[in-house]
Length: 199
Ligand SMILES: Nc1nc2c(ncn2[C@@H]2O[C@H](COP(=O)(O)OP(=O)(O)O)[C@@H](O)[C@H]2O)c(=O)[nH]1
Ligand SMILES: [Mg+2]
Image 1: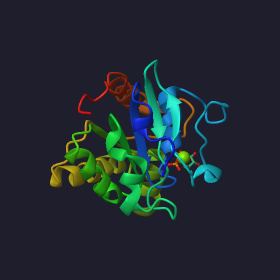
Image 2: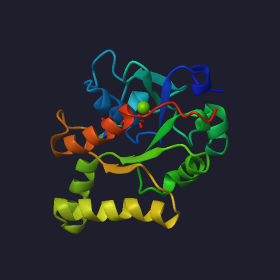
Image 3: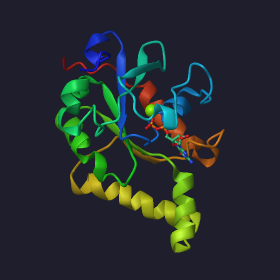
């Protein structure tokens, strides 16, 4: 069982960041907090941090926390028991970080929807997608972005899942380049997130 489940912190707004290993959860948290990856207060990122043992909490505002959940689908955190072990449905909002299309996270997205939890879908590594698109299919950056944005919206709309927002971001560049407006949009949405009053 995860020791840092959201029910232990009933007086804070708990925003869960969930996804498979290497999806970019830690990098997203650092970008949203405006903290460089090697800052001592940053979420650890990269190879050494991909198999996290428990949920880690990072302050976003006075009352709000971004909570990096362990990667689901790992040996210690099989997808089947993940939501029960992390008390996933006790979060006030979820950011679902998808790596390969959005199908890997369909189950979690569906659970969030059924529980009435607002959720945002983020795909990181837009810069790598652009490189791959060029190398594999000779696509221009805007063509790759268009293709992926269609791919990202197909799955939720086909399954009647309504994310608060869909984002495709480059989290690697120091200033987030052209992705700054998108990131700021997500940040603003999160800062206005209140405690869900259903409990
Ligand atoms: N090129 C690129 N690398 C990224 C991006 N986001 C994350 N990464 C890298 O991908 C690896 C995994 O990221 P991390 O945030 O640790 O993923 P986590 O396991 O989901 O927490 C790290 O080496 C990051 O630096 C991105 O947008 N672009
Ligand atoms: Mg991580």
